[in-house]
Image (cartoon, rainbow, N blue to C red; front, side):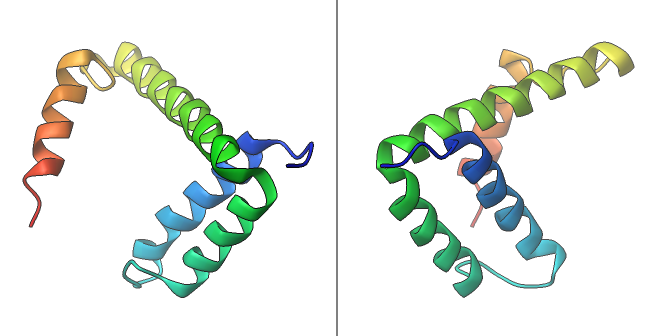
Length: 91
């Protein structure tokens, strides 16, 4: 384990995952897989889990700020439940 910032590494992993669809590729993706393996080697499993928790919290915070600005329910507990259900139904 190094002193490398897990949040920065996981944020980079998140952007790589998000970029796959935009680049017209599908998961699993060799580039993302290689980055994941390097990230896990650099920060370990605990670093990945801690980094994902922070990235998720930051994304949810931005969704809640968005909801407050435009008057929707993005980021709310109800929204999160609906999204979890919707994603569980994907083929």
